Image (cartoon, rainbow, N blue to C red):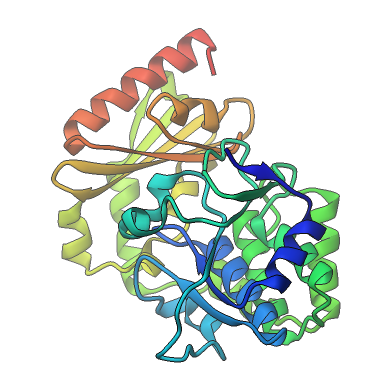
Length: 322
């Protein structure tokens, strides 16, 4: 059973530890990476040996977050911290090694079911980046431009550049502070919300051509198959944010994205505008998240997954159960 602690207590623990690994989740987004690297930089400033653990190599738009975090080859981990990881399955390829040895869990998902020696979860925070900002203050570390960039990336990407319903006054105040501290908001906003590639344009064309509507137009479903990924040679950067496309459409209350990861594994992302709970929808398949944004994974082929989620969407939207 995890012990719930305060941020001040979390800071004291971190200051008492030396060789620390920070875990991020699979299919990494700006929040898990920005929060993880910001915390790593802060701990390094306190003289700690730190390494950020990811499920895959971090390249492309997120690569700048790693600046200045080279790790000694003789690093030996003593303590493990997870950041923005709501459930063990999100550890991906790192699950077997780390699931049972997490010392501190930091998260903002109301559905968090991680087991750790110590846990701090604040579901009122729009992003883990808000939590890490407060934690860095508790550590007594001065926030430099790079840490500010990491945290601004975390917060702005998890709020859709402050467009999502999870944005609060505290979120905006945190972002304003990071601006005052010198974060390059123009670069970050352009990189994650404006810049696109020709492959992304082709992908969006395919999405709009193949989008499926059900439940009388109240649900829109898009599909990204392995064949499409290979055809367009897509990277995670190319696919970033596509989950928000279905819910932009007038009349759509539940937007669903199915990403085929292998022959019998699909990742589902649910997005809503708040009147339908994405979290409750995904809990039906062992997942979860937030009211307006959640996800899950289903170990079935893509056609079976399609049938399963559309059937559940019809039940939810036609009977008002979500």
